[in-house]
Length: 242
Image (cartoon, rainbow, N blue to C red):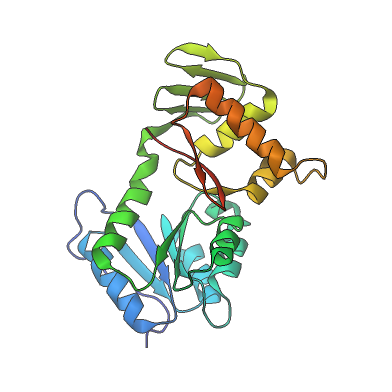
């Protein structure tokens, strides 16, 4: 049984050296399997055995990515993710859930509290490593030129001026269309549920429905093309790096 946390810092590869990953799971075999495979990739790896301990360790080591099991004693992964997302320093930390559940509701619950992705058990080491590598690198194409400006693909999104340029040409968007695009583009590949979009863009307004979101998504696709915003069936939407 693993107690507390530890990390290995041997054989760091040039690509991943310095990037920290925290694994939170109550099963020692899974902790060991994931740690071994990520360590081989050159990541600094920390572990914890429940959600409470995971939050404590995260505050100490400031990981770039956190892998959370959903079902754990003391505090489950969904609650731990929800609490960490409320802490400013973890607002943009990648959070990935491990789950043996195939039920759709657990995925939606996870995305609602701020999950970036899911990895299904049983763990397949090669697939897990490639997924983690992809998650950590998928924002490499997004350049935050300033605090309020994103350059991604052929798009420039200027939040301060509420302007969007595609291939140098100005694209006219309504205010809510712009805010929706900026939200999705700020984290390429992250799935945003309808609930989280409503909360972020419309602040839970009672007059806004799922239909309102669908209409805004359709207008974005009409103005920017079909490639940027994709639908995750039954869950929500995400921004794709083409």
